Length: 126
Length: 367
Image (cartoon, rainbow over all chains, first blue to last red):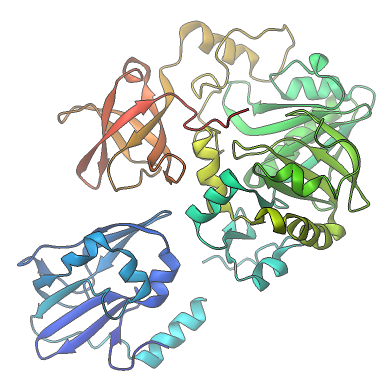
């Protein structure tokens, strides 16, 4: 269901770890639960982010949710293409729907889940 | 998440089978969304849609003095209502604050009320108490009667083949007793979307069959089920209050703009003195509508400020994207001195977004 090569948070973000570069997005489950997206607020390049702390917000017709950084680090790049195509987050959450790339400071937290643990979490909350 | 089991309606399993997203609403497991909020809202404006409203409260007062009891409960003059007529009103406390907003139905042998799901328990306690004072019988029919609505321009076309009587001739805010699919029903030309449509009450066990028959009959007209989220968007476009947002335990119907002028009758009812006092001195705050060009959706609790970094003068009650207007809309309570302002600033997490005040409703159908 969710890609095996990614790690996941309890707050429904996904993380791709490649060396010290971390790509962050929201999971298909989160995107589906939010539905009709209307606004995305992302950090700026160079912003410092902290594990478990909000680094952005995503808004749907019905609710505003924080986007939490899964790691400590500094923002390398934001997906500015999304400003005109929020639908990519829903239709391609693990591809074109990526949100930010972060330069990892220290290590990724051990609390990140693998795909099977996250599948289980989603199944339990469904 | 709550650990208490959510109540189901007779239609819950049908909603589940069609892939609706179900959520806890006032302790009921209710369909919040089927195909998408904005799609569903548009469907009701252009075609029609069905709504499971079994979570709402339905009750009646019978007995010789039923109309006196009803008169003490609501601000409208019951005597002036014809048999078969319906009015929108409120249950107010002695201090004028609203306990709930309700529909009151006058029939030849009973006074019928439709009340909000979230206020059922306390409304029922209040109606029981008042009924007893007048020696009347109060019955909570919520679990015996189902309630389904159909709203939208194709409602008559969808329902006429299923209903007895002259559906087309039924006036807005009137009802009659007849049948739907051969089942005895109370057919009411009311709704909560700003569109033409009906709210239908009948025996609970018939709900799945009638729901299916309505969708079948509506198929050629583009009728589909609509969730509570789209219903909220539709009622907001139509400028209709939602208890817990525009009305609550602290609001008076005068500041909500629901009683604008001196009451046209001398009937005593709970809250009358406080309502008249507020009418005489003018409310300190007023309910206003606003639109915003911002991509951010107004949400309950957001502060409204005077422009250019000014003081807070209001607070948002409701907000939604409006598929009909193509902009974000909201309602807010604003200090009366500023309720006539052209623009205010809405604070969203420290950022100010301009809003333009405009009279309610945002949408009114052509009649």
